[in-house]
Length: 270
Image 1: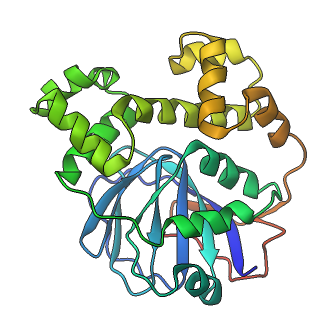
Image 2: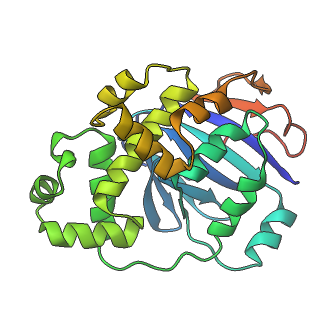
């Protein structure tokens, strides 16, 4: 299969837009930690664990990091595979990422079955347009990601953003594909996946720190979002990681999976 997988860690905290960055290969970027803004040919989005994005050769691509640094899984896709999956159809920049897909891209660097990659490509082929204010949905997502206190409640956040709760709820669902409360759970589950991947074993402490009611609430939510309980996910993350390391340059560190190395040139996403 014609693709390569990298982990890209960016330490940039610049809130302004970057200069245009040339893209010479199709890439899918999945966020592992943090979030940032992306502008691609006039389309703007906030990338976070629930929304990845596409890098398309020939498109103007700029990024902004008002929320600090971040880490991503970047999948470079060869032209033949890309055209087979998309069949030449136009694609939008945003890629919806549910809990199952997030777990899958985190496991790719451990030599897991790459089949979820193909399913991810199929998701990007034809995303319908949404109505309403995309910037309002983006501001709400960024408030959750940044830990703004009012973001713990839809009514309070709507008041802060100067809109009605009903309008915020409808707009958020139209652009994010899920309710506001479901999104907050997605962010917490993403935090749980990251901590478990890093070796966390105390699920009760993890539940308390991430804002779940208790360990049982954590377990139910993680299983609903990913299809697996936390204990099984911990087992999947154990064992050696087959990868090669590349040096850090210009605020970006790239770690390439050894089993994919050589299929395509190694390159950072930005």
